[in-house]
Image (cartoon, rainbow, N blue to C red; front, side, top):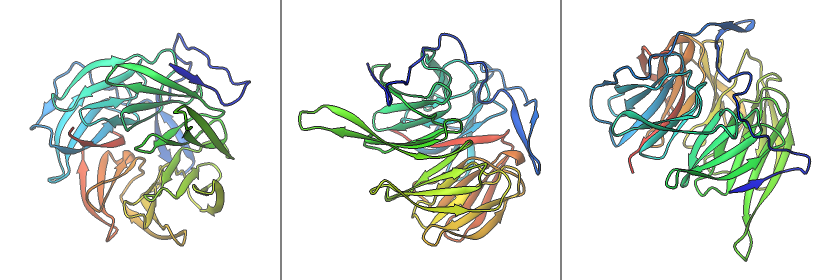
Length: 356
């Protein structure tokens, strides 16, 4: 296993116990004054029966119910729920490799679900690295961001072993990893840094890491990469601005300021034309023109939301309206609501399942 450090003063601490504070022990109620702590609804018993209404389709939208502790499988053709799989805990981000779904929560380790069998299987022990926050799958590996311990671990599901750990000067609230696994984009909510990590392969086949960092601030929780890979947008929740970084030049080219409440998720449309910005304690999903950097529309969804996900096949955006306990489906051509899927308990993290 390779352990890679950015600075000589950066120490990798082995976490034998749990960190003192989890990322989601308490859910957040959104109001005009900011976050107000509340006690979340208890998650379902992970050993309770699966609610299955049919086989998992070859392509499906995966949604995590944060409060219920369930993985929800949705058929993108019918926009109907196919299964609700109890996994327990307070779910956050999730990712899939086309067979298994990996979920982070306040429970120990990474919960793993067999999407075909619609059941939990053996979890992944991450105790040496600390609790997870960001989770994404790219290429042949699962990448896990351990924000508080400022690490990114890489897991090989074939060997069932961790084969790389990267130390960061700042944390990794979310992660974007390119399909070829050569580039990693991240920003922290506590380390005040934006980072682009490039894996460079020399002529002799050895790989080194090149880090490019940009100054940030606290609460950088949202980020998105343009479909062509040329622009990296980072959302500053407290300062109410968006940093636009030119990726090929590794240069900050623009800062977009906005007025708002609490905003912590941002996402490019699949065609790269629009950028969507959430409102945690508002009722609207904001839409920006990616080329002019101007807000062009607000879509009323009735309550505050968090997770935003783009359908890789259809011109659709899926918006987890967490405060309204629903998923809103939006046509990204007309910027109108297609459907609302009700009855989801505080939905948040999403990913796309494509059977392999």
